Length: 125
Figure 1 (cartoon, rainbow, N blue to C red):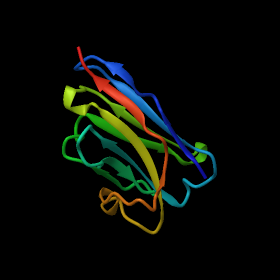
Figure 2: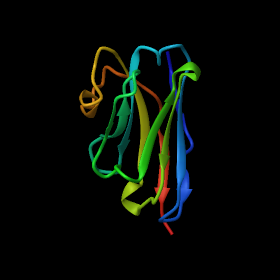
Figure 3: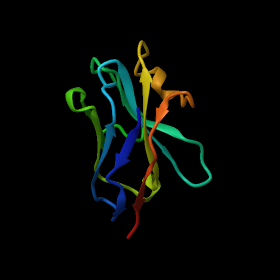
């Protein structure tokens, strides 16, 4: 199974982007999915995650600005990002983790998850 993240790009501060994460196989029915990001010189961190039954977990910086959604039937997850700031500049990745797990546990970056290639988001004027 492969994950493919897309939708990144250059956006001005205050702008919006919608990222997509598509899985090549039918895994969303029993996998939690998370969005993560890694800025230059920083560790990878969770942005938002959701289990297959809809439990969500957002990083504090994402609450109120970012919205995670997933379409299990299409094996696709989305991250709607609004009110973007220069500090949001990073490579964004999606990852899937076999359940059982929790949305809270998705805050732990785990290399054994299935990871997609990242998509670069640059917030700059």
